[in-house]
Image (tube, rainbow, N blue to C red):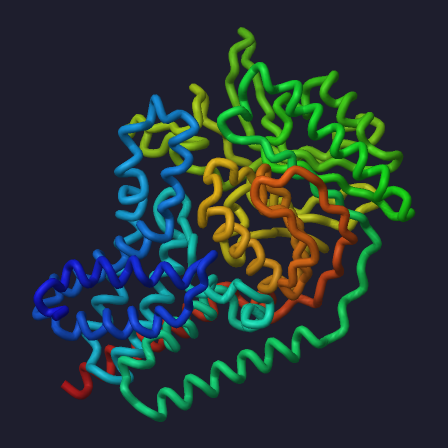
Length: 497
């Protein structure tokens, strides 16, 4: 049957594979889709046909996995209605190109263990390449994120990292193609070993907590009203009131308090507006610190807007503006126009591109453990979430209101959760409309506010673990292993004719 419509089968198998990703986590579907795709490749007569099959598989996979980008267009549907049918398919086109590599390697490799190993290795290399790719890379929905439904199966991340978990997942998923009882037994043993390791790791004593109370504020502001002139003051007041009540409660614990607002939560330029600074400072309990997402601006000598930054600002209860962190990984077509503006698509309204910050950094705030801020999707990049001094915690502030109630916010949260396990560092996440949460260094969710909820979370900051192997070793170790596996497979093919 697959021989009659190979193109349709490749597209459908790729789309079905996305069911394994958050929030569905239907992992068993991979045991059907990956082996079927390898069988399809085995029937390809030429490398060109195999490449097209790989491209179509990847296109279906990424269209189904990133369909939610279309939701952002509905915030200004009168302007972007024409993009609705092409947004997700268009974004999936460059992502699909990375699926050509595993398809070609599987086609080139001999059937059996060589094709199985080569496909998994090439899939891992392709994911790594996608993270380094054009427009800053996009390692969204790595295959290993399929395990992010619970902390237990995520523990191998501490040893092999995100790409290593993707490698193991691809190996397990493609096992049925090998048709070997020994392979099945080996896969079952490996799975049991990983789950046993996870259970053992989660049973270990918790690291000492630093004695800090976090207050995450989720204002639940819809994207279509977020920048409305009539709503600016009501939105600001909502954040002020939530912050005042929550920090006063948290301060009774006798520990330092940190209030956290999501990405661009302040509708005013919080780092530069004296009235906004005074109002925000008054909302803080004595001794508390506010870390708030806000836009920063700069004007030229003629008073014209010349630069914008998507920033996180530290504010004391006395109204002093402390450290400032600027987002360094900007969203193309949202925060800046790539390709010199050749494609006239700017989903975020405005005539000035945002400027990029210098990169990841660890902020040292008075009386608080060092923190590495990550704005929006900066948190999805394995091995690139801090620089300099190792932080005691990671902070992800984001605005997922763009994507409504869809798979997008769940996939974003899954990626953030994986970074905590990889680095052995707890993570706090404040999202405009959810999901806001505090995750410990083992990836366990300590507290969580779901989508479209208004409220606060008051949670003690968990402690950090010693740096795990995934963080201490080179970030590309697993990719080097995958490249070695590729070399072994292709070399063996040449040696055996």
